[in-house]
Image 1 (tube, rainbow, N blue to C red):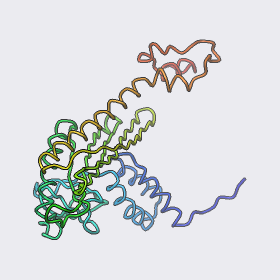
Image 2: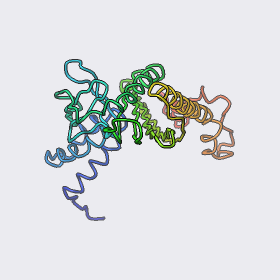
Image 3: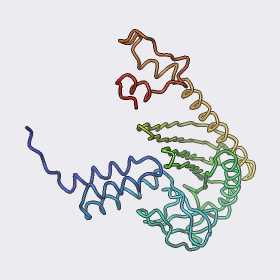
Length: 302
């Protein structure tokens, strides 16, 4: 019999962090609670959560309400000013975030140095208004924000700058054993010399179903596009139209691929002719209950 090897505190912490960082959307608190009882070591647990939660919160682009109903803030690296402090460009406020508790503890007005120049703000404000309209139509409970990633101090035409659109939407229903999330990040480079806008989008969809099983989806997609550099309002409309087109196209392709799962992927996983010599009824999969058939086959029906 192999001798059991005691893990070091460092190894325990790395394993705990892996579980935390790989938690499905909206479930890291549940995973943390279970890990605390498994580790039975407050120091290792506290170090694990303090390191994992900030990374998880930013990668999942969680949305937190600010105190006094003053708005919401997205936890993303694009709005991160310093440790635990995040800018909300729409309300020009800076929120202090407790990552482990996933709450905003305080809020203050942003300083002039933390905000974009009036010239950049024209483009950012116009784009934010168009994206807000789009997200309100396309994503129930979706949230969004537009940040200036480069060139926020540009005062007049003649220089390049970059805006970033961040969209986050979650649908959490743990009582029904399912959670899901949508995250998309669009980097828009405003190239003044060429009078062109270059768009690069990264889309990510996650879903977790865990009723009588454990099924997860983690789909990613990247896309590129471009349009003409125009006035703030016209540029905003063109960008929002492009984003709407690519995201709708990707969602449609996802729906099509998963509606064909019974005829393609699942069918390929099964033997052409099973041992029972009875073909699987692929034409009627919606009425097929795996649990019922297994219990019947094993003779353990109630």
